[in-house]
Length: 514
Image (cartoon, rainbow, N blue to C red):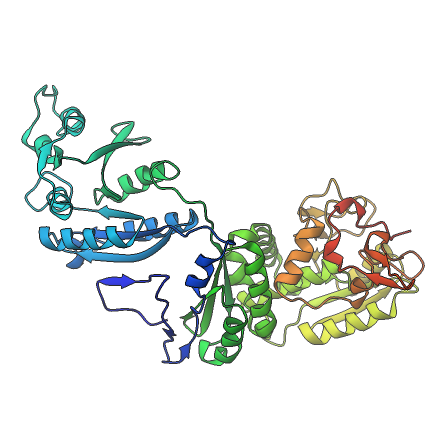
């Protein structure tokens, strides 16, 4: 999305505009019909806030404004939509007009800057003009600033000229004492006039004091559900697919932002269900372009996956791609792990250099499912793997593998703590006594069954078709049956199978294993 060379940025939800990409391609990204949504009973009213950044020093680029970014993020996390950020000079009439305009259009207004002891600190005078108030000394402010400004040794019992300047404010203004930790005082005064709250321009004070207003002075009953999808392709190539999702999910706000030769797509919804449907549509339309690594690392909802990527990256840094292999049998866990390892390798640009491939070793059981065999072959093609098959027990197969390839030092495994004999494992650990020696890397160790399927769905990762036929855990034909919890008998006596992610109890995952 191109930058805006204006001082006032208007992002009012009642007037959504079509965004123009960096290549001047129109994409309909804000067709969310807020007026319709506000008329239904499904949503509570969205509270809005305007932000006024005051100071010549900001406009002259002498000081960087970080307050507006902090306020935007904090307010959005709290469920309040910021409609406008205005950066204006130390001019009483300009400040008064802007504050009055935003006050009439929003539930709340936050100002930063223009509060101090010098001639150009005119926020209080501007506030008085905006609301047709006279100026008067506020006793609470005067008491506070007499104690804390300026610091003297010994402290003066009488107000200084600076204290008077800090305390001269609109007559009907109210002082809100906010909590202030690890600073010169345990509290800090914020002036409130109508729906306007004024802060000094000092970022540390804004960041420490503003959260105290949430839930008391500034109230919201809403929550925004957000997601960011990173694509390893220029946004000009995904316009058609993106607009298809926008048209199909008009209650969701989509944003597209070019980053070098990549693209970041953001989604914002009013409910978790709306977000999930839109995300599924988006990933389904763009599976081949999804940058799994960047998407995981930039979404708080995927913290467990972020840690797994870090474990994988640590292993590759320690042992290198040539010294590692993946234990792969076509099951859901190792399929997910394969996708994550592949994501890290792409991020580190370690694939397709000098013809390198990730080695996958299939420790093959007798009487394996034909569907599993077919899926393993498909994964070899899909991920460009080097596949080695070892028939028989894993212990003997591993010993044979290490004789043939003694340079191998570490194996990625899809073990989870709920698996048999895995409760005492750590993420990086040598094989047990009596086993061929190699480092076991268990990036999924603390994942739940639901974590696994949530991530598979989220990234549209292909998986073995048996999981859509009532199976929740796969072994061989002789020791695996359908999970009774996923099988439903229809009125005509036929069986129907629930999706594997409908199994909510991790303890039931292996009920189909004999």
